[in-house]
Image (cartoon, rainbow, N blue to C red):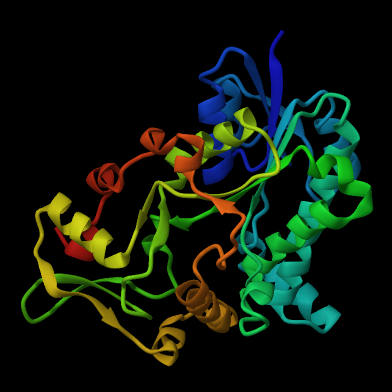
Length: 339
């Protein structure tokens, strides 16, 4: 008899990756929740063999029904779509808070809803995997207080670990701290990091710090599923940093140039100030958030220096992950290097 995994975020990068991996295993029946099972992006997965269930992260009862019979659940939340939704700005104004705090509260609520719903499925549930991030505010001793999209997820982690009603669920839970999306360079309104020197045509990275801090680069669509499968297969109560390769920006730029046959600048990383970084972010509501997030990562690491965090090699899956060269080869870099 097949085991059942229920996936959230099926039409996104993380959830889609998890579905692709579990669909390879006949021992698993893959189910996924979606607000609208009829939309094309959802039907794409139905055609691949995923059973779609209508549910909404804002509707606790629908989540409880969706999780019935599940042996594993992959739960993830999205801070950014509400951030760019004009309705969020209106609701935030009505509540007298910033849109950042509004989205922080919304994401935390949705994460807690999924944990509460999962807690009602304990008769079958073996593993609850929550896509999380580190607690910047706590791990920095309060220095960085505006890394909202990290701390909203960390708030859910605390709820699962410390709420007395979640005690049993916490013993069946593992957390995946998903790293730096390798395709974030495509985002508009944020810092342009890979640059061409107009004088000699060489390429370099620009950012804060000295370029020597290790970063968890992840090809999210390819490797999230591999990481989640490992957490499902292994014993619970783990927190794993999720990445394809653990590199500095200097190392990444060397690989990038070698893969594309381009010339690396003699100074592969050029440092900018925090104020220059802030001014480069064109979407005003996240200027401080993006700046503090990157500053915190430089000073304390992506995982905030949390000693509990393990790396993929500790579960023996490092060779199953995708080298960044594979991503670089298949990507269209025309916006950066031209035709």
